[in-house]
Image 1 (cartoon, rainbow, N blue to C red):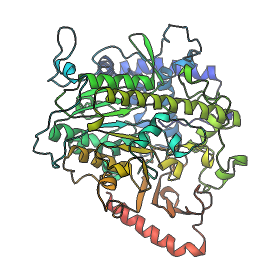
Image 2 (image 1 turned 90 degrees about the vertical axis):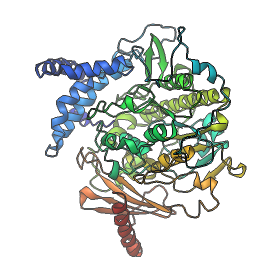
Image 3 (image 1 turned 60 degrees about the vertical axis):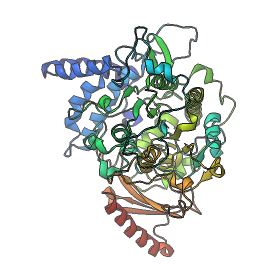
Image 4 (image 1 turned 180 degrees about the horizontal axis):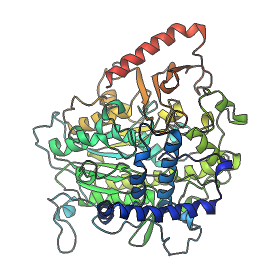
Length: 604
């Protein structure tokens, strides 16, 4: 979620700000009625009844869409986005607004009046073959618990002779490659993910091709670069138009899979008369906060996603393979509250973690040395810069924010363990591929920024752990430094199902790296990175492209005269010294520029 606020001296007092927002809500509601938007309200109510969150921000988005047009000024864009996000936060930042941060009173049983309660309505769209008995149970559920084996699939579209694997994708938000204990990070603790890595392979140079939430998710489902799937605008899922080539669709239509999605979705629904819930056999969309209420019981977002995952396992047909994406919302921040750690809401029992530890500061933080090395068009108005100053501008804020963030990471690690334990109990580990990865990386103050978007390592590199029952023993517990990408995940999933990959996909099957003898030899040695989102203006969030190799990285900033940067990754792994203008690198820069243009044409 992109958010941009005015500089500190331009911001009104907190109380005035919320008064304005409350007033804006009333005005918007009146305007909506006068503009006959009753149908839109009914659609939102319908989504709420089906188990989604009633999003008051939808009304605001309808009123601000006209401002985010091609001819909108930068101020128009800023004002529209600020209004949109602030109103949405009025619903979501319940603990901040009501000073009732979950965990302050562990004995309290009262629910915050603004805590999203998604206990109403049907929480999932079940396969028609699942018929509930009088007691509410399912016949196939009784057969499946515990389940040790699945019946074979005789579908003619299955291309390989192996039994189709179940697929589980564990997919948190805003989590970069080194935020995992196994990576050797000094403070972070992820014992369960570390254990999963020992049972599979951890890919150390896994990257995203566009580092922003919704664009990366479009790539996950389509197996396409953003240039092809074109889902560039927030909540504008252009890839719905080609859903029949996505892996969820193909698993259902070609492999007779039971396919589900739990957690963050982010795209508008319905869109062009297409409803995301109809794309899956099971859905439970929830996002935007770190705590939820269901039937007046509080759940941390990590536990809530695990709970819905277990419900998916309960209702899935016993005679079908399954695939499920568990899109955890944490550790993504909620809002830009200025108090230290105010964007993160961990579980109370995790608040003692890291209390007596000091989180290491990033290189170049002192005197903003790293920030000053960025190109001149990186100004104080830059969104990533603004987030940095708001969330971790001083050392107290930095330590609080990072410790709260790592506590959320720990809760996701625990939730992943609960899910994997459930697979163990049901005897499914021998026939299930598990993929742990994330949607994008994150700057934790590196280069004087907080956020993602740009081609730097902290932004584009994300964790990837693959557990695969087909994996040879000699590969288990190993590391692989190949350039794997999020564009590869779709083909990897289809490969596990034995389904033919459509020509529209642009990645490779990652299992080639551990199932084929020559897999690593023939694997890519470079890739193109693209960040094409330009709706925020070139000062708030400049677009970028990059050619990424192990030894050098070449950046281009299209909105700023195709400004070029070059980094020697062997000598300068933290990308502090731009060597684009060094005479000794002239020929290399020309070659990499030409190669970038070739790859740019190839991904359209």
